Image 1: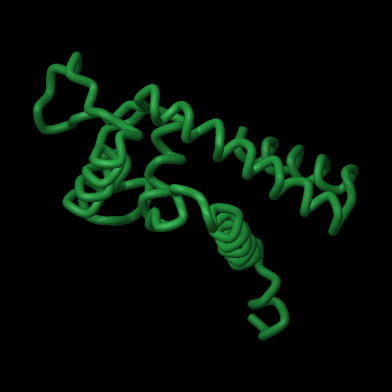
Image 2: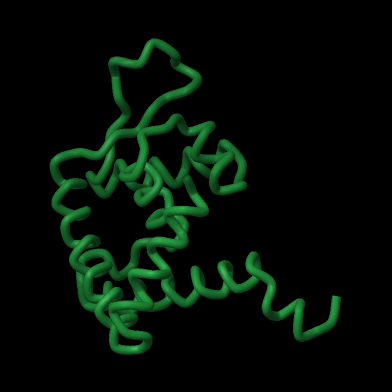
Length: 141
């Protein structure tokens, strides 16, 4: 694969774009109570918010050890953003869920994401942003 093709492969571009979005989200959190939240904990919170899943499933999705996922969830519990669903029957596969405080945090994150999307509109325009969203939805279907 040529250097040019290597730099423009879809997986690499998606990774670069994700890193860029993560950096911009971090900048939006500056000066807020979430400024010092670890990037990994923010990702854990996002995954839990999008789809309830066990700690084992979180570890698999994030490609980290189960212990690391458990520690991330523990920090989110300390923050008050999540709690363990006590209705689950398995002690091994605990399922973290969003608390009321976590829902408020999530609303703030949604506001940050809207600001981030506004920045993208400024850069590429609304039409291209919606085309990108449509393509991503199609690829994930």
